[in-house]
Length: 506
Picture 1 (cartoon, rainbow, N blue to C red):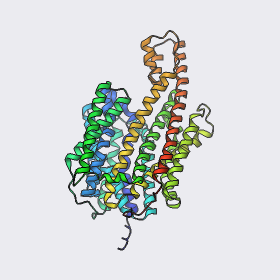
Picture 2: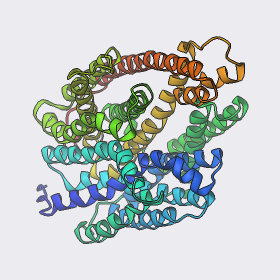
Picture 3: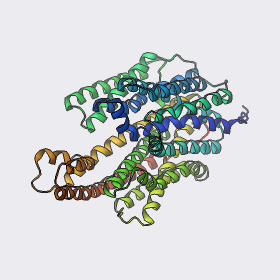
Picture 4: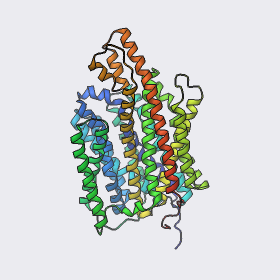
């Protein structure tokens, strides 16, 4: 059987799908800086604000696998174009939403569009680049867009809010979609290798509800948003639905998701790497942003500039990972990147940020570069172990890993931060219990509490908070370093037999 000639338009196709992917990634982080502004503009309650933020990753986590498997059945091109139209319309709806409920609905539509786009982008890259070396480079460039997009989201959001109203953080997606949609229409091949099986909508609904309930229960439980009884009830329902979904996949003659994908160690390793690495990156950025602003007194823009080494190095990591994997093999590149990440986290944990010198930018750049290489290596592992006809399903599994990692990483880091901070906060004497309880929640609450005290007592409160947060930052980053070290060992074992093998040769 002759090897098909490579698509002469393949690099233009890559550019088009990367531009399609960029707004989806930006929307994961761009909203964080706009929350105070839109809360006041829409007079949104605290519960509504939580749903505005959480509905996007929660719903997308449940939709990614169904949309990826649907793409394998009807074609990546058709699902991608539909997703782009939905995402563009939902962005316009969100930008001009007159109230919080309509903004929540718009965010749900954004999640649907994003869930159609993300696995198709990976699937199209897998099918367009048959050559292993070129595929590694293409996935590296894709990883660059993902890492850099998520990192600069808050900076772009802050810049837009400095000149325009809160809806501008959504409206920016519309002109991008107006360029990307016709480009993808013209460039993407109409001939695709698809799976000729029905798409079981009942199984899709079961998975969506199970994922939504489970992820919501985990986030709500760790963030202490709901009573424990309600969290456990929702978690039980979610796990029960997922268990029922798995049983249906094993027994059905036409399962929605081929669970045999999980029998390939390279795919398992890639998904675990995606969850832990994206979770660590999101959690570390959250920790550093608070450290820089609350403890060192930097503005949001100064904090963003301080973290430029992470963003710049992350942008380089993707292409470097593809080249290194082709030259030295996936296993050593993946493991070394994770080991360097662990070392950089450990170094940041013991570094004095008050006097950073050259060591902090070097450690931040090392962390951004290594985590970006690790994330791209996870893509190469997953897509290299999947056949072309499985590309949508495999891509959706990886994208689910990113969503779960980012969402749960922020939640777990945030809750862990609150617990460690409360235990290390030494409060001034004579503080009322109500204020003491509030101050122990977070560094932000320390500032709020200090405003209700006299000048001397307030200053003592803030000084105590800064000291406690410095300890918290060290504990958090040390813990993240240990987890990354354990992940290095696990990936080394799982990738024992993995090579970036040609699809179909496993």
